[in-house]
Image (cartoon, rainbow, N blue to C red; front, side, top):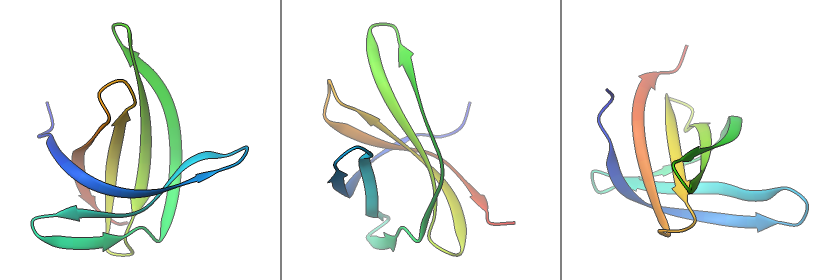
Amino acid sequence: MPRQELIRVAVIFEPGKGLRPVWFDRNRRQHQVKETTYRWQDRAGDKPLHHFSVTDGESLFELIYSPLEGVWTLVEQRPDP
């Protein structure tokens, strides 16, 4: 299972489009989201989860937002192809 860590994320709520992450903090470094490459929703039991595959131009990250808990989680990091 990939390592998970709670992180701080800045988002924009766009009418008709929902959440759009614009930056996140990891290891005291702010990563600007240059592109959201994919987004999807699923559930963990009764808990809805919003997933975002994003890149800062150097690496690919998966961010998960849990609206019931109000927390963001960084699930994994892979080098950008």
